Each structure stands twice: as C-alpha cells, then as structure tokens.
Length: 343
Ligand code: SF4
Ligand code: SF4
Image 1 (cartoon, rainbow, N blue to C red):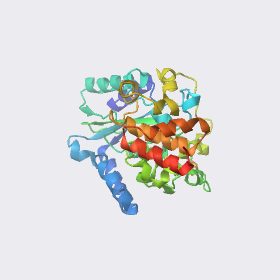
Image 2 (image 1 turned 60 degrees about the vertical axis):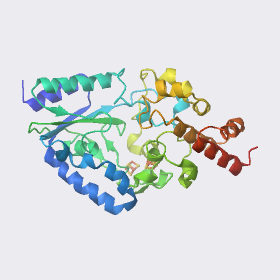
Image 3 (image 1 turned 180 degrees about the vertical axis):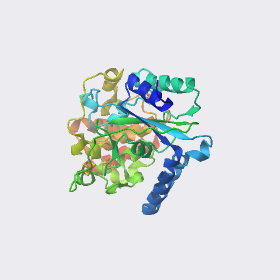
Image 4 (image 1 turned 45 degrees about the vertical axis):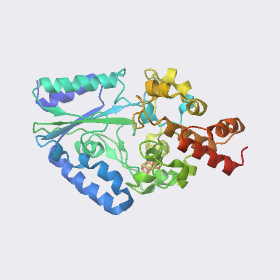
C-alpha cells in the first residue's frame, strides 16, 4: 500500500497529473526571503508584491499547516483557435482553475476529497493559490525555474500549478530531467516588449503586459508602454513563446471544452461591440482576472490592439468608440483618432 505520501502521488498520477511532489511547509521560508529581496530590487513592484504577501507566509494564514502538496497540470495538448493565437494568452484560454467542464478541474476536486478521506486537513485556493507555487514546485523537484521566471517540466512552461497545504508532516520528492537554460541564451529578455523582464529571473510586474492587460489595467490611455503591446489583448506569453526550451512542447491535439464556440465572439471587432449581458454570462467567468464590471477594460485593450495593428476596417469602429458611454473607452478611442488622424 505504501506511505500516505506515495498514496497521494499514485492517486494524482492515476488522475492524469504530470507531477506530484510534497514538501515540508518550512521549505517555504526561503521564498519569503526571496520575496522581500525582490521588493528591494524593484521598489516600484512593492504594491504588487504586498498584495501577494499571503503566498509568502502561508504559516501565518494556516498555522496548522505542516506540508505542501504541489502538482503540475500540462495544457499544451489543447488546440489554440487561430483567431485568438497571440492575442489572448494560452494560460487563460485553457484555464482549468475555474472551468468546471474540464477534466482537470474535476480532478482537482477528486484529489482533494481523496486527501480528506485519508484523514488530512487540506486547504487550497484554486484561483489564486495558497503558497508561492513556482517555488513550491521547484523545491519539490517537479521542475526548474528558468530565466523568464516560469517553472518548466518536461512539458515546457505550459503547465498549470496546483497546491494544497496539509496538516500532516510529509515529504516526497519528485524527479525531473529538465536541463538548465543554455549559458548564452537571453532570448526571453531580448523579446520582452516592455522590458519588464529586466534581468535574468527578474521581472518588474507592474510593467508586464500580462499585468497591464488584466488586473493591473487601470489607465491604459495614459500608459506609454501600451504602444509596445503588439498583438496582446489579454495577457502575454512572448517570453515563453520565444524560449527554445518550449520548442515542440505545444501539441495542440485536443479541443478545450466550449472554446471553439466562444472564440468567434473574441475577435477584436466583436469584443468592441460586445454587450454587457453576453460578457457577464460567457466571457467573465472564464477570464476572471477582470470583473463582471470590467468589460470596458477589454474594450480599451482592443482599441490598443487596433492602434498597434491598424488597418482601414478598424477606422469606423474606433471613431464610433469615441462616443462610448465609458469614459476610458472614449478617451482611448479619441486619443487614437488624434494620433492616427482618423476622422
Ligand atoms: S509576459 Fe510579456 S511583458 Fe511580461 S515579462 Fe514576459 S514578455 Fe515581458
Ligand atoms: S529564452 Fe533562453 S534564457 Fe530565457 S528562459 Fe528560455 S532558455 Fe532560458
């Protein structure tokens, strides 16, 4: 039958998880130190990291916690709809954290129940995590962290991470055969459009496109970096797409539940014309970093995309958006009209 650690790992593999490691909670202490070092290194990231503080100090929130079970869930098997490729980050298109229709979401629920049946007290937070998950995965041996800050397994960086804290002292190392970054490689940093990835393993989160087009997007019309966003509408994966260690890792063989039906509604034109009800019912539940009241942010992001990839067919849409009832949408549209001399 094996130890309780082995039973959890066996169950995880049976469910289709790629990796399952278990580490003592104390191995998260060093993460708190790194976390503070990062704030010192990039002071403008302080606000961002303060909001993440709970991930660095899980023992304060879960004083009963003694170990962390951490798992990887590859998503490179899914087909990327052509019209969304490069515009909406794949991690969000295939976000299994919240989509109850996916096998991965259901597996998460099954594994939690299994651990509870083994007598463990466990806690997770499917949306936002209970610990610094890349650090936990690194400590568990599930993979390595590369210079672009992402955790890589044999599936490349195309893995979601899941973790539970538990009330039992446990430890079970995973194994991986992932080789380090080539010594001279700098491709991720060179390709970062905003230079947010400013040094190896060092990223200024408030300048990252993923932050600025999702939960950090407050005032894109006044954000000079928005001119560097290229094709990105929601999220950015350029530093992962260019990485040679991701070459050949995206298989794209399976349909993701409901995505092909939704994809035609997510073209730039259709987002700009999207009704609130449709957004609240069909889009927001999947892309939860923006709230039910935040359709305007999607529209601002799309206007930004239209400016950065301007073509004549966008002209009327941009001009019409100058009369949008939302001030930020109209401000963005008017500034583009001025900049591109549209009338
Ligand atoms: S996600 Fe995009 S903006 Fe953010 S660090 Fe990577 S390349 Fe730069
Ligand atoms: S692009 Fe190069 S340096 Fe950056 S993470 Fe990939 S292998 Fe490492």
